[in-house]
Image (cartoon, rainbow, N blue to C red):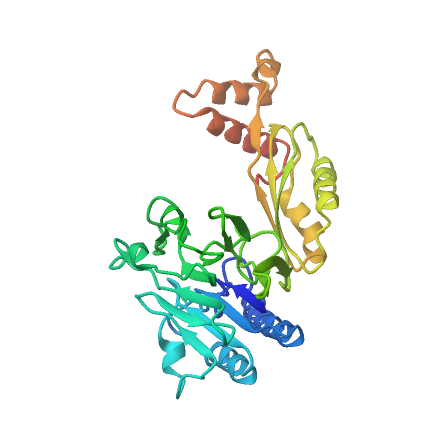
Length: 367
């Protein structure tokens, strides 16, 4: 028996934090297309069930395109059973738009609900929507037949305290020794898997597509392949994202020119080899001399056409060799000594003022 575990699709996400309006719309369409690709994979590989462990949508107001894409996927694949557990971003509007519930769509609510998944009840899928009202008692009410292969679905943050974004906490310690074979989780946007107890594992499938620079790396879904007769199983992460997101730190310590910094950037990119289809953020780190000639606008222009989207962020620090200017009788030396004596400025502020002043004295426009 083959089962797909996915979560956090966030269809209809605006995608507008960094992108232009045109590319944001393109990325929205790509999210829908990646969902369709996953369903094509399911059909081609004779998948029996798709578990959607929360946050199918990103907003309470769902577009017709996003609503119809999911609806058609369910109706077009009557041989696949969909198990949909709402997350903290989901709303009822998707279900309200259905004239009637398709027979191959199974839902969960605020109490535990179980479904036999293989026709004979040897594989059982159980889930509940966590909320503040049921948090105190819900784990005590979970009763599983330990002779079955038990999959449990939940959406929330595996943590000891409440999440800051409205998601509930998944208490792993409260789920141990309950007879769970596979705990299918949603809410964490990167693939993560670990031991639940001697019998079972827990797994976050991650999101299908990374949406921002806090969602780097490969994204896709998990494929479970269960041998019902032998009561054995294996899982495999299937990459599916249209684009990959990279956030790379570039140490520019001791660079003195824009060309020097460009070489460091190219070396960092060569190590990771992002494709032209990627979204890339480069973060300049380290410390450079206050007289370093650094033109980040030029560096960005040199690289922006190489990738789908590129962002260059300068987090480097300035260092000033104050001793080198202590006896300098030039206007530059006098300026630096004056700034150094300004007790109302912090050290990092002094360095920034000195950098801008040196650029102005050289006839350049300070960045």
